[in-house]
Amino acid sequence: MILIFDLFETLVEDLVLDFNVGLKAFWEEHYKDKCTFEEIKDFGEEQFLHMRELHAKGLEFPFVTEEVPLYAERFGGEVIDVSIEEEAEFLMKCNIVRAYDGLAEMLELFRRENIPMYVLSNSGFRAGALQILLDKAGLEGYFKEVWSSADFGEVKPSANFFEMAVSSVLKDNPDCSRSDILFTGDTYATDVAGAHRAGLKVAWINRRGEEDAEGYATYQIKEVTELRAICIPERKENETF
Image (cartoon, rainbow, N blue to C red; front, side):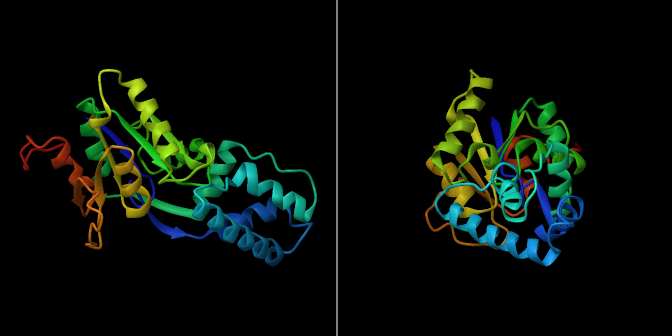
């Protein structure tokens, strides 16, 4: 078995999600002498609407490569060169997250069982920044690769985005086939539908007990840690990690 995970609300829970917290720190460092915070905040809200329009078309709006240059164009100055570390810092100001209870223990078990694990995320932040967020959440070293739509340019449920990940996974694991891959995510329209159309088994984290209207989910679970019983069903319930 091979596991591919969604990231937000699948591996980590968003405790606080506020883009303006990161934007304010960005403004204080780079634009405080060029505009007021209200001005850059209003411009950021315009970009959020633009991002939503792009997402509706299946396209991503990467923060560093597409949004940051617009701030320079609007308020003046050179385009800010944002390192992966700086991008991760911005991301973690906007998204305060925590790993779900028992997740690290389950991932450690899967690692000991030699189950390859990957992450495929819709995010305007590059994969390197997402990896740093995972590391800070206590999930360092479990995933062979993290892919972000910010690097690829398309968002789930894009068939191209899924196919890129699947091709990479099968190249890493030449003795496996598409039928060995289980994708886990919480959003039906992007995760479940996209993975199903890519020919993958799907574990849907269905916390609200919604209807599987299209019948796409191979499994339905309420918590990500329920994957343990799916991936290693022969283990006794009272066996420790």
